Image 1 (tube, rainbow, N blue to C red):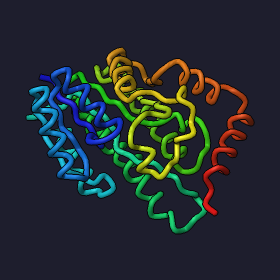
Image 2: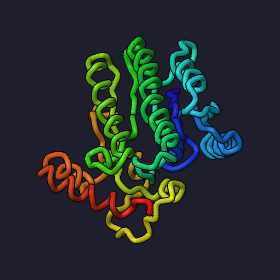
Image 3: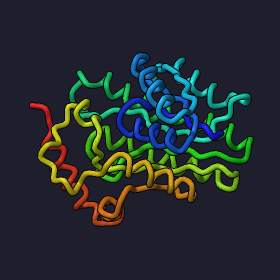
Length: 258
């Protein structure tokens, strides 16, 4: 039976991935900090779908914890078929405030360094077996310039493509997922008020993950959830950079600290 290791697998997009894989009969390894929530999620998913769910408590801002997860990915006795590099959090903060330095450092640890370490571990193990799939969760913010969050997600996007090219021809595929506004608890936990956004910009998490899995199975290097976000990403990537900078400046100004 196939297995999927999902970081940040108890909430948001990560939980949606866990639910989708469990519904397909895929065994799970869930990684998150909250032990009680991990165990509750594991009990629920195994009870509903009858899959094996392993819990792996880890704080991915702590190197020792990251290395434990990497070791699990490279364990030859327990091969992992899918890695969903999803753990992360929103950064509703300015790069100018010295009080936010620790938060930015944690963001780099969780959403860049941990992704690099775990992607490398999974890539080596999967390459040795000649098969496997990795999905790295980036963001549509990777194509604009809204503070450190855009910078972090741009790194994730570039890293994902670089890893895909390194593994080309090995039987291992790597897909960067570029979601826009997804209906999860993510924005509320980051302190972002998204209540005034029009309904058209939103996408359901289950639709997002189904499309991501389909794209990964087709070997696509990037996955963008639907037509409106694919159009937005195309404009941001290929349109006049002056317009992208102007939009980014407006978005940044709207959330500056007083």
